[in-house]
Image (cartoon, rainbow, N blue to C red; front, side, top):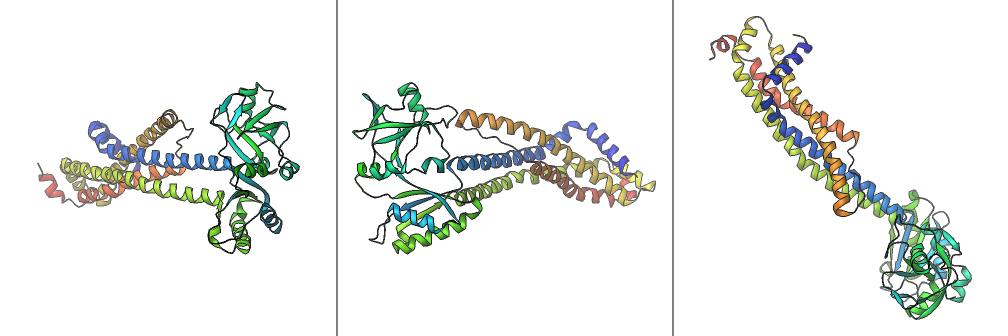
Length: 398
């Protein structure tokens, strides 16, 4: 018997019992679609996480000076020296002072507006561009000048596009607006990236009362140099502070790698759990093929009596099981695509997050291959039973 004839007979038998064949495929369909959606969610989460970290800067290092275990201090000049000592790893540096002070325009308090003290390199590090006026200059840092740069939201909402040269009060002090940043968010909103005020870090630490900078942000020459940059920076900090507990260095690139690995582990575990339904589907195929062998015992006996070899009978039933499983895989893939599109819409509607659930070609090929393999694997036992039937006993079977 030719392979083509075996496939033709398989399709004929499936058409004869459409309802039973569909119920047999159901476990495969659910398993394949579930695995596709879960892998798609994992891919979407990785892309979303990468985009989010790139917005924050995957080429940046954040340094926090805790001061634990030492009486030594680290000045901005010390950090600048560290930058100059490691040109093969580090490129730019800026202090970053978070302030609790509230901004005020006229009589209106800007409760949601973020106020930060920064250095002249901060906007370059963050990828911000000054649309109007100028940024923070070195002279502003040295002289603790009461000037500031504001986001586009403040310029549009509070100054109607004419913030340059106007004043804003921060913590009871008057600051002159010397620059307006270009819009960063697609839709500038209160409390967003564009709702911010930046003043010289030297003025910020004086207002804060601490007199020292405890946070810095640095850029590295490339993401590939992240590990070396962290090691060099930690060594330089240790040489000055003499305590490993006195500082904390966080690499955004390393943090992204850790987050991606965690997502991969979670998605893999979930995909394995969802894949259990494939085994259930395989058991269903084996069960229905055993029933089919029982129903077609006389047919098998006649064919063997006419000279059909065992391998022909085995091939026919294995192909029939594989076809049922593969058809379930195709339907599962189509359903997986539909559910992925639905999941994308639901995530955007419920979580307000633009994350696309996108199954990869690898997951599709894996799903189809798994469905066909399960059909062959679980169809072999019934097929072997059919092939080993004694033709005389089979012809007597009622």
